[in-house]
Image 1: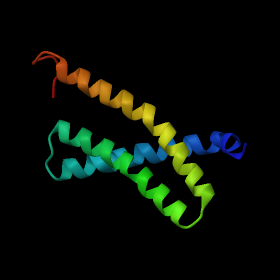
Image 2: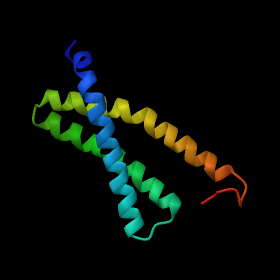
Image 3: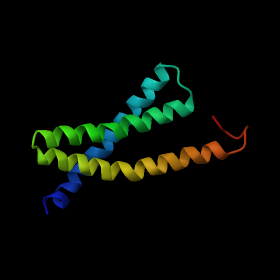
Image 4: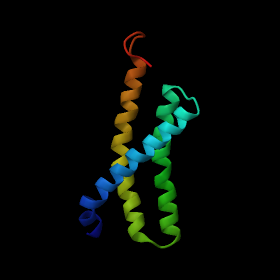
Length: 101
């Protein structure tokens, strides 16, 4: 299938896009004076929100290739964000004074 054949190219592109989106989100939250938790939330939100916008635009214009990339983006993003959320929840359960932000 074309979807599987495109994965070697699409997954690295999606990973770069996720990282850039997360950095921009964290930067915006930092610029607005957000604390650590708000910066993490904005980083995750920026990366996640873009996939819905990309899919909506691609499907409304009949661009199935772009919709395939957006689906690959989501499938790449999901495990990254699950690990990020688990990590930051773990940080939040650590006792005070041990690196907790």
